[in-house]
Image (tube, rainbow, N blue to C red):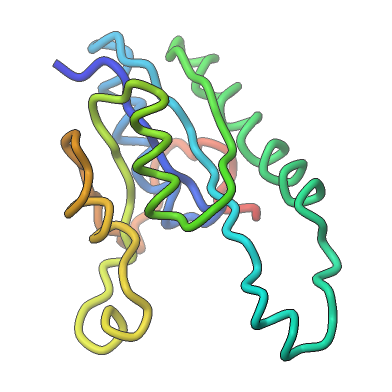
Length: 158
């Protein structure tokens, strides 16, 4: 039985799409949800080519991530679900896998854009990389346009 699930969120409605499903099962299964926000660094080549330094500092981005995760965690706790959250910096797939180990997660649950063909080839898929490399089971939920009956935090905000 799964007791600790890691849920990577990128601030979009797509990534939050897995939360309504988890809220339905987390309480009865006495599951702990660990929310994760990964901040990917701005590549040095972008800074060099652009000739400008990004306006947002890492501290600003961490603060924004905390302001995004905290109300989601509060909403889940209000439903009686034990919830924690963490922020990591680095390549998304690497940090998701590292965070799963650090949190002792026995499941990773995430939504996917469901790209296929050329879109998948051009953009890659963090979900696919996590699925291939994870040492714990991965639950993937494909994004649909259907909205959940009970929004967790009002939809993707950042």
